Every structure is written in C-alpha cells, then in structure tokens.
Amino acid sequence: MKKIEPTSAHPLAILLVDDEAIVRKTIGDYLTELGHRVQQVSDGASALQWLEKQDYDIALVDMRMPGMDGLALLQKVREIYPELSVVIITAHGNMEMAIQALRLGAADFLTKPIKLLELDAVLEKSMQLLKLRQEGRHLRETIRG
Image (cartoon, rainbow, N blue to C red; front, top):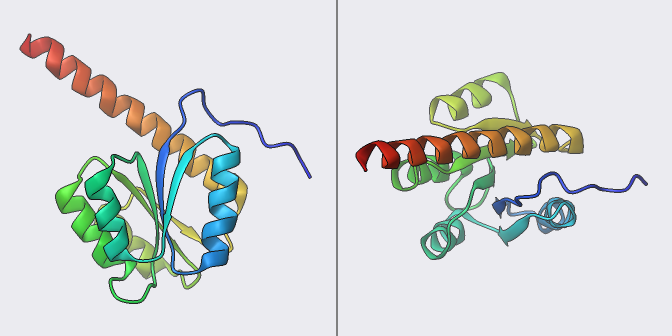
C-alpha cells in the first residue's frame, strides 16, 4: 500500500454526507490521513445542522439518501452558503444527473466507487478555488479601505 502524503499545508474542512456508513468511514479515514478535518453525517438534515455550527470548505454529498436527497441539499446549501464547494457523489450516476447537479451549482460530480486519484483532483481543484475566493475577498476589502 502506498504511503499517503498530505495534500496541502492548509488542510480543508470537509463535510462528508452519505447514508452508507462504510462509504463515510472509507472516505473519511482517507481524508483524515491526508490531514483534512472531516465531519461525517448520514443525511441532509444533519448536514444543514453542522453547516449552521461550523464553516466548511467543501461538502461531499451523496446523491441518493433517505429524506432529503443530494440535489435538494445542494439547492439549500447554494441558497444559504453560496461560497461552499459542493461535490455530488453517487453510485447511480449518469450524464443527465451530472448535468443537473452542475446546473444547480455543484462544483463537481464523482461516481462510486470513488477513485482516490479523482477525489484528490477534486480536492486540489477545491483548494485552488478556495484560495481564489479568499484572494478576491481580500482584494475587495483592500479596495474598500
């Protein structure tokens, strides 16, 4: 097994939302080993509660969950937390679902089983986007004085 290297000197705060415990554990353990701070929840309502309590950089959200599905959660998150990067993950992916998720504001779309290299690429993209948003916010604050 290859040694996992941290992806960044600045770890991400990640909210992992999936109703399958094994998926949460597998992905959560991997992300934690990379040095990220991960909060795992099993449904959309719990995700919204955690988002009220704490700031996150990225949310990995399963498409199909009991109660509120991933797209409904994505829509709520985009309304309340527009800067949060949301990545939809699903075992039942097709092109129409991916397009719908992206149109609703998802940062990306991953299919299960998730390949770690694809997850790494999504995290890297999210880190770059986060950095750009922070730089933009800093520039706006500087201009305002």
